[in-house]
Image (cartoon, rainbow, N blue to C red; front, side, top):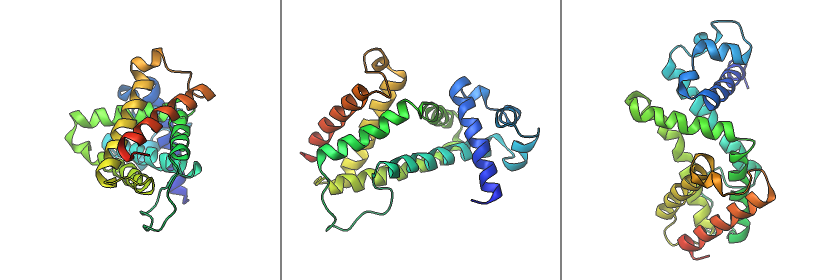
Amino acid sequence: MTARTNRIALLTDAAIELIAEGGMRALTHRAVDGRAAVPPGTTSAYLRTRQALIEAVVGRLAERDRADLAQHDLPTGPRPPTAAPRLDGNDLAAGVAEVLDRWLSTGRSRTLARYACLLEAVHRPELRGILQHGTGLRAQARDLLTRAGAADPDRQGDQFVAFVDGLLFDRLVGAGVLSAPQPGSAASRADLSAAVRTLLRALAGK
């Protein structure tokens, strides 16, 4: 990483925590300076406008999501050739569940910030470009569904992301909070794995 890249990572990580704690109203250049413990004016020097700051935050969220997927051996690159080994449904469900549980526990701030930024884009058309960061996850899901033996991995991969995103949202801020196992626990991972396994059977028949 270059010095500039490192500094932007520091600033955007601070911004993520601010958004998670106080919503988009908490996101100001001055507040990011304070949270990141950098001299006043640093954030505005690197990310001049609020739009630039939000776009950088979403880019950082996508970068850290990719790192999580790679850590759990889930594909993050180009689609494998057709001869690539087929994924076992149970192993795939367990791997996805590990990532989801992390996003609900140690990565909770990032997940809250992601949803907040997406909702901001609903009301600010100039931010719609941040939606492009979500295309990477859809491409990865298509790869997973291909290797799981799905008949139509492009369409079913997109459906997989939509269903899993709904599961994540429900466990984070929906009524699922009231009944789901505590995030970060073995029970949470097992419950998420069972849900993803059911989804895979519906989409890929596996």
